[in-house]
Image (cartoon, rainbow, N blue to C red):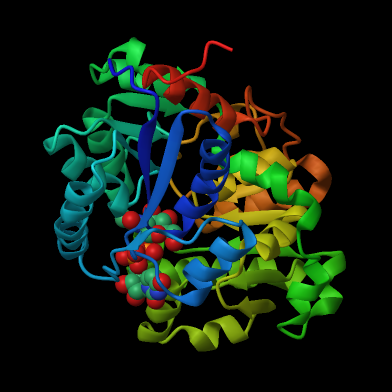
Length: 378
Ligand code: UD1
């Protein structure tokens, strides 16, 4: 960017739950920066109190300047609605750049609108690749990176992925992980696991429990796969009871497939979607975490808690090579073998990846200020 005026306006976008913990430290760093002003647009992709408001409150994210209120829909509907509603916001506010985070539909939709209007796009958490194009997020990642002018990565492999796709190194900055900024910032305020388990009448499980999250279409949309996974999880829960905050998508799929009764045969603390501080408490003290989330693979690595990833691939390979993550897929034997190893004390201890130090947002904002030509010489 070649502007040299005294201040630049960065319009930031969030849409879905995992975006909220990524934007929180960025908004804080932008507010503290000289020469940068920030505004926040929420697309409304996630809208329930449990999926949105709890995060804004707990993470002290400023209320959005604009809420596009798009809600749910098919991928095409949701993406198209976001684009239609985002364009007039850019016309009115005329930001100097649009900053998007992560890999959800809101990320790619807003990046596409901005770039077509000649507004530079900043992508935080770029370059992650699972290699699995059947994941909607993988498509969102590839396209958003192609559209972006300034790209911030969380781990070294990301720059190689971007280079392979023809994105020049001079646009790419290794900044660290803003999700881990949020984790360290909030760790002292994490809610005790006993209180959260107690809300499902199972405070007594706090001494030994696992945490389970499940929401990927590949795991929950096909009734046969979902049944196989739940049967395996029932087996695990007999020895290690599982706290299970149930994503709205998963709740609907379990009900539609008639699998609620199966869950009753195991030891699950079935919880509504939890706030950030409740999740942090549940993760921190868990004996193990079973998940298909992307962010939780990173958070468990930062916390040193063994993580069993119920997917065939990960876009976050550093959580495997340096962290506590084991990618096992949805095969019963593989899951049970990994859980048995963790119970035997053979879980991965891991180490903190480079630049996962709580200061990624500061580095990102300093680079943005320089790029916008507003960095102070002082
Ligand atoms: C989205 C992201 C995914 C992310 C996940 C975290 C995409 C393609 N996917 O998936 O990467 O890991 O968020 O949660 O962007 N619903 C509610 N209340 C809400 C939001 C959704 O009930 O506040 C229900 C609706 O029935 C909706 C379904 O959840 O149809 C799925 O929501 P959607 O935003 O389409 O995708 P997620 O599965 O949440």
